[in-house]
Length: 194
Image 1: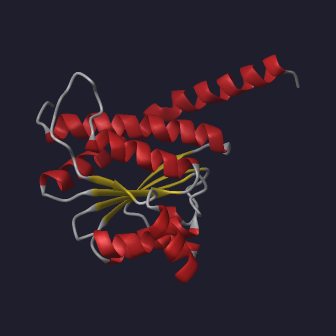
Image 2: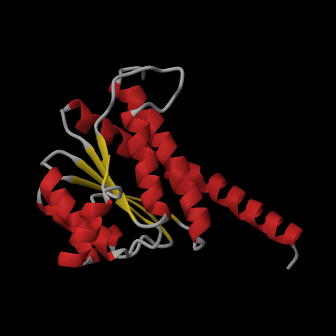
């Protein structure tokens, strides 16, 4: 396959995944309402994931803390990416195992009524699974952004938005688009603009 063919294939797959996003409208709308409701009740949003999904967790948390749109100055909304503290992550991985890195943070930082968003392209990341499992058993609302068939985490999350595609890059592209849509909707709902 030549470079042009690879380029065309990537764009074709991207467009196909993006064209399917309206299929998730009701889940995205519901999720945004849940997130805004939690924030209005004085709770926070926690986010976790690995690799590119870790970057997405950080990106989404930043949109809430700083602002999503440059033309809308508003107060900071509480969101924490559980992927950023290298001392904590390495200590926990060393002392308890990599599968515990997010669960321990949810245990220490989460409280009932908070929202945990786990991002896993496969839906099978053991550390995301453990965090969501712990959160649910402690009355923290759980949301999964996954790909493929949603994996094992789909079965334990309160809410799941599963991008039905097998290519990790395309799933991640959809996840960040969904993340941006959620940020905008949460802002609009939280600040009574819609």
